[in-house]
Amino acid sequence: DIQLTQSPSFLSASVGDRVTITCRASQGSSNSLAWYQQKPGKAPKVLIYGVSILQSGVPSRFTGRGSGTEFTLTISSLQPEDFATYYCQYLDTWPFTFGPGTTVDIK
Amino acid sequence: EVQLVESGGGLVQPGGSLRLSCVASGFSFSTNSMDWVRQAPGKGLEWLSYITGSSTKYYADSVRGRFTISRDNGKNSLYLQMNNLRLEDTGIYYCAKDEGTSGFDVWGQGTLVTVSS
Image (cartoon, rainbow over all chains, first blue to last red; front, side, top):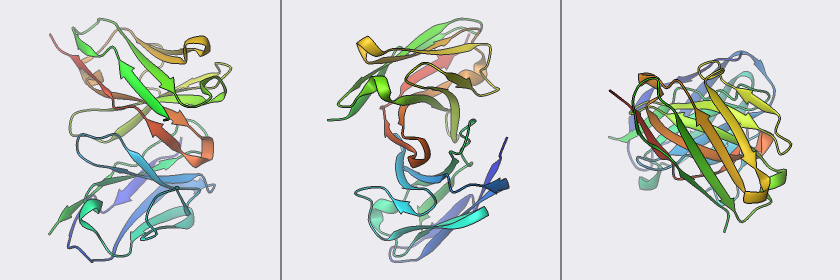
């Protein structure tokens, strides 16, 4: 099974900052990598799938990149509504593992 | 409106059973694969189980042999039968619409399962 790690686990940032979250897979992955945003008390929401394809309605300040075993989610200019926890997920085949999450908090 | 609504959570003793339900609306349920995902208190997301429209099923190692996923396409409903529950099964359980490599694009609001003596 593929294992996913995320770094950092926690980051503190200010509105307007550029932030990047990294997701690493234990073995080479296809392009079946998605990113989710979860706010406290809410269900997760898919932001990006296929490594870099923006889900409909997601702001363009979110960008996904990567290949092989290393993938990134970048928020170009952090907005107040972006403070949340972000998870990557492997979707090529079961188990559809999630990364452990990265919490983006207000500095 | 595309919607998933879970129910069936509650308080159960270790070793007990519970059946979760998820009712779908606003999309062609019978042709969509579906998943169950849980989140322990203060923890991350854990994928549990997957079922195709024709009821091919997969499970995470942590629940295989104890949990059973099923669906009733005539009732637009997804189920998770949970047996031999453990303390570590406590958490919020979500059902999700599975769009394959496009990710889980619709989620329910979650239902809380608490396993405690």
